[in-house]
Image 1 (cartoon, helix red, strand yellow):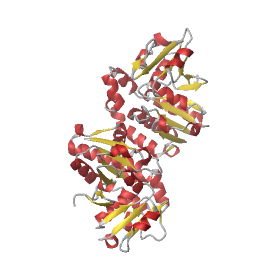
Image 2 (spheres, one colour):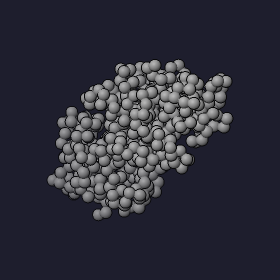
Image 3 (cartoon, rainbow over the protein chains, first blue to last red):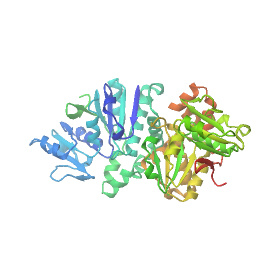
Length: 239
Length: 239
């Protein structure tokens, strides 16, 4: 199985996704939030790139979520903290979500055969889904404003490591950037929370009062839920 | 000390190098070759970006070195294997060198306050030189045709780790990409040769008959020689 890892959304070219599975990763926090919402029974999460589009799309029964510069958007039901998307709040509801990087990554991947949302909390499940889909796979680290973010790279490394574990070492073939991310994950896996807290977004989250988000988003393999894009919304894969 | 690590030459913007120290890394093989040539007594290595410019610059007593697609250029004295640049062959001589990625990286860094050539064989010495120069530092992984190469990233991680060791952990401040490369280096340091042999350029080198080059270029801290750009040529730093 061939898996290419891309360092940030700016480097991703849509045409290269044709006929492939794309896993978009935005650990802090878009994909962690989408996974949490679906895990807690949301009917679907619609990722959109602008606030205006989010408001236009939202029907009376929908919930609006998202952030700009880590802050909740005025008039929205939720920000971008996965901790807000509890079962009580989201069960049975459709959510329209707009974030700075993660939802843009999903939009950019739209030409892919399948688009999955990966994070540290569903690493092994993302690996399993990608294997089941039997396609060449691209892992897109969303990054932040077209700059590489460590937590996304570590998550890419986790998924590669799980694929190597599931398929056997010789069947996991990746590019040099993927090899580097796997190495970085292996070095960090025993102290993931501390490592992520020391990187650029980890520090920013802590400063903005979202330490509990970093803690949650650093937990490996919490859930089997893998969001997959069906038409315009993400729903749980395999259900 | 602030050290930014850049994944490939294409991502490097010359204006960002003003007033900084830049360490250019092309482990396989340009910077390993320049270091070896100077270590073996070459008077200086002039990095140029085209074959025509190399031929124009070469005076009667000079030696011509370089490669295109890993192969020696017709009419040149050497290819780009550090093993060719022996004391017997290069002592007292000036060398004009043109390679696909490494010399281009050095050219691109020309606006920096100082340009150093780093590789695994002079990792600790490069770290020491950068500390002595007391400037913000940028490490440019040359990569291959604007794509990240693992061996350059591992070398960046080695230099960061040496700087942290020399200055103390809190005084080594790097970007997320630098943190990732340091993690990747720490994971790989006990088996550097095998790791580099398994990446894209390592495999290419082995296939082209340059296994011994990979072995040499994977050896940590073989030499104290750090090439520094003075006018148009690289000479040993601090001599």
